[in-house]
Each structure stands twice: as structure tokens, then as C-alpha cells.
Image 1 (spheres, helix red, strand yellow):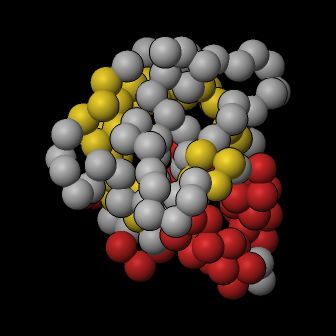
Image 2 (spheres, one colour):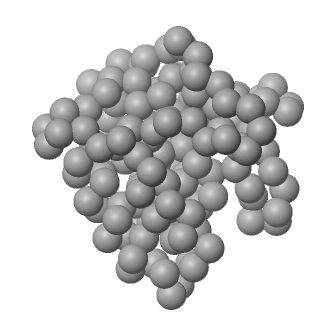
Length: 142
């Protein structure tokens, strides 16, 4: 299944109830320290479809997910784990949700693409290739 969007349109995203609640609180808390990323995270959380408590989609990026994505310009694939700021460690591939790419990834499903803006202002496009749930270790390929 491929849900690519063109131009500036953002794809539909899905969040678990727990991620929705925690990320809403994080966006509010980060407003003073990381205003731009906090605002972007708040926008993403606000537009997300929220699943009933206890439900999740196997192929949707959530906190703790390992994500394989492709840079649509270079073709390079990268694997990262999406984490909360205290757990971030770029050397281990742990990307904070309070980074532009972390905010772009949250809620995407396998096959979805999104444009995102780097901290230096460059616009990039990525496509999620696989999502591995932190609990089961099984990748969900496209």
C-alpha cells in the first residue's frame, strides 16, 4: 500500500492514544526551549487520527519504533529509532521526536512519504520502507 502525497500536502497519520497524550504534553513543555519544533510537533499531533486506548497499527511509526526510510532525493536508506529527548543518541541511531525528522516520521505508515524541512531550511522528502515495533521486533515492510 502506498499513500504518497505530492507537493506540500501532508499524508494522513495515526497515533496511539498514549503517544497522542505524551506528545501533546511534550510539545507544550518544549514551547520555550524548542519553539519551532514544538509547534511542528503540536501541529502533527493535532492533525493525527487517534486510535482507541490499547490499539495500535502494526505498520505505523510510534514512539520506540525502529524505522527504515528512504531519502527520495538521494535514494539513501536509513534506519533510526524514534525516542524521547533524554534517550536520543545519534551514534546509536536514536532520533529525538523533538527534531524535524523525528516529528516528520511520527504516525506515518509503511509506504507513506512526507516533505520535511531541516534545521538549515532545506526541504527533503522521505518514504517509510519498514517499521519495527519495539515490542515484537518484526519489521513491517512495504
